[in-house]
Image: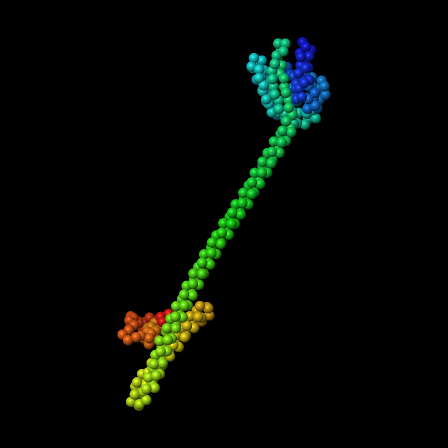
Length: 305
């Protein structure tokens, strides 16, 4: 009967290009085609009556055994295919991935299993290549993302520096404008302060020429004192102006001394009184003679003036 069964198998096996083999219920190989022989490195008849598991790796034998037992229990009434992806073993003991499709059929009242075996080495190689490419791509993405984040961080830092620099420049420009305004106001003040005492000196000088008699000495002394006070006042203004210039250029030398605050206040008021017009007075608290300062006396006087 096997001869008849074999003859029944020869025709389909010869026309299938993929690897095909047929096993009986005990999983012994009944027939193979040329594709199976080439795939596993065997010659004709070498696989005859060998157990199916000789073609597959030890790690896959239990899985294959369980699949076949369950497949046979279903019987031909529930005929269907089952696919497995396992490792085949070449005659040279080398392993390679295969996909096995199992089909049960029953010619001449005897059950057989047909296994279509496809070498998927190239597919697995492509999967590995794709996996490696994906991993390499992900690594490149991570690297580019890191570089991008570093670039963004650097740009943000540079932008912060630029903003800070702009703030500093704006502050410097504002201070420069304020300084120029102060200089303008100061020069206007100095010009006014010079004109007033100079006018008084000129007036007193002209009046001195009119008091020629001896009994007019008191009037002459009065105008001489006016000229002296105003010259002294002009000298103080010049000193103040030079002091401010020194402060601005940073070339000032401080002369510290211990002095009474009342002394400086009295001097500042005395200098200001020269410029007072009729009816004007300077009101200030009575100086406390007990207050002493350790400071540059001239700078304090300049500040009060």
